[in-house]
Image (cartoon, rainbow over all chains, first blue to last red; front, side, top):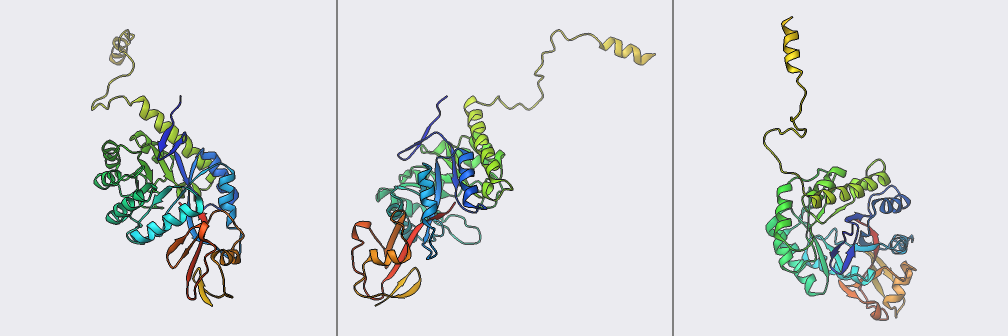
Length: 267
Length: 65
């Protein structure tokens, strides 16, 4: 069953986007990426260090055929985010950008107003913008309205692993925008990823849940399977919820032992 | 001439192009981007000469979420 999806100019079959930070080693990172089945991975842009070796990650990812999604992590203003995106496009040759404009260091929650302004500016500069946003349907709709290629509401704050705090908002966002909805940040374990997909989201972006698990390669595989399972369940369409119990096995033709049970009790 | 490269003061012989200062810190030819005084310098313009007190940022792709 073909079930590809499009984000910007990319057509993907995997619905897992994986971050490249916080793994115990680069070898484990590459094994985890492969185990998850991801095709699109996030990277940051940072100062080159004089000790060298920095080219390895970029080359390693490109040689393995991954599409790169540079982020603007660490940006607190529209100007910082736009300049970082321009530098990322120059370095990596992609118009895709994961836009993050963070409001404060304590919560790492997005600044909604600055995110919308930066997104609008980047769209005008020809970027395919994937903004990290709060799970607020109004902000998500504004981001879609200014031309973002997707919206990426959080499940919970970055790195917390608290899972989907407001499933109703994610489902509202899904019904209010026409672009892909990618749950970004806060996924803790495989069931969170499955729920995101069951809610109708198009993909899941995660990092810490895999990188900081006891076995990142096994967790990456679990996430890949959970996303597939959640997606399949969504497409299959769940049976309706009911208030009272309803036997799944028919009562028709049930054997008549009751009379025997009650007569025994009388003995 | 004194410039700042990735936050560190550096003394360069004049003239020095953007490309030459990049080569001081990395041999990588791909995956590198440069900003001078907060403005992106496209690869095609790396022959541009640096000016005294320029602030140069040389960035590469690193692990990120």
